[in-house]
Length: 207
Ligand SMILES: [Zn+2]
Image 1 (cartoon, rainbow, N blue to C red):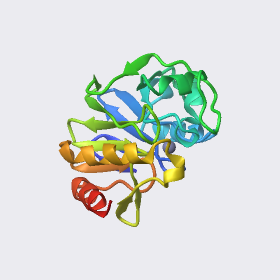
Image 2: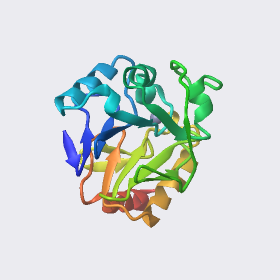
Image 3: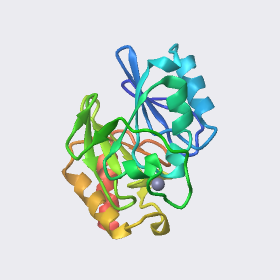
Image 4: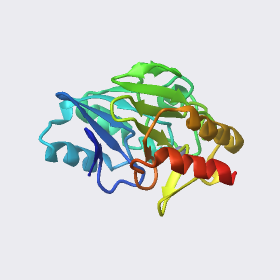
């Protein structure tokens, strides 16, 4: 499904996988559950691309439902993997969250404020140490990973037991009020077009 500009949401994955068309190249944000790489590859073909057109896979955080297919997608596309430096140990297998993933090499280390392919990295720790949001400077769409989730048109926090430090996560949500974005693209739930900032403000007022 096309979301906005060159941003697509791959159909029917458990955690959202976003595909960005940038000129001739493609970028992925997150990779879905183990086995879901097939859905991603099918979507790429449907758009008229080949897997090798994927240049980089950017990881919002290293939870199983977001990176379960990362190794398979990296192998199928030859793409580089980019992640925040505090999340890299969880991708390479040095550290582990509750559910293990297949270790993968990370070529691009991200830090707060760094830009990658027109996306600005916003370090948003709490859910995991190296969770990031990504602001697309062209469309003002903000990819938030599991910082917040959407349900029935409203934003919610991810249930606290899934986050390493829910209060730190809350602080990171509040900081979004200072970010210049319009659309909010969560890891779980539907994208919120136009009203992203208002929805974050409503959530923060409920804290
Ligand atoms: Zn998560």
